[in-house]
Amino acid sequence: MTGERIRVIRKALSQSRFRARFHLNHDDIAYIQSKNLKVIRSHAFDFITKRLAPASPVQDGKQTPFRGHPVFKAQHATATCCRGCLQKWYRIPKRQILKPHEIELVVDMVMYWIQTEFGKHALVR
Image 1 (cartoon, one colour):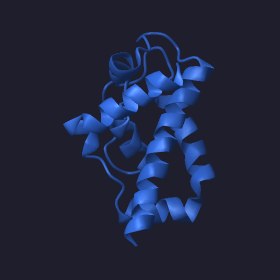
Image 2 (cartoon, helix red, strand yellow):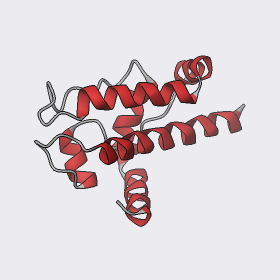
Image 3 (cartoon, rainbow, N blue to C red):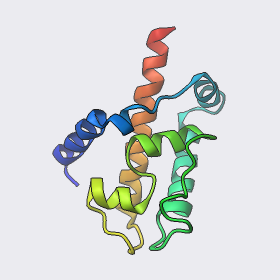
């Protein structure tokens, strides 16, 4: 996927009323600070690999909670929460195992969102 396509997706996500309502709260920020972004990235990779990468994920469409971990909020904000959203927003077909570069794309999108949200919190302090 090209950088231009990623920019288009990010802009569209920011204009989606549903996607734009997600934000990190103080507990999320504290959790990220206690772990660091490298550890959060490893959590994202683990969640994506186990919950999203299979061709037919368990409970597809409902496998990503709305709370409980900053990565889950980021997945909803970036439309990387289920295979339906991946198909709609990223044109990644359902019912196929995610390729390594697709997993990296998803993790990169999640981490970009987390870092952006984390940066906004730092500016507010």
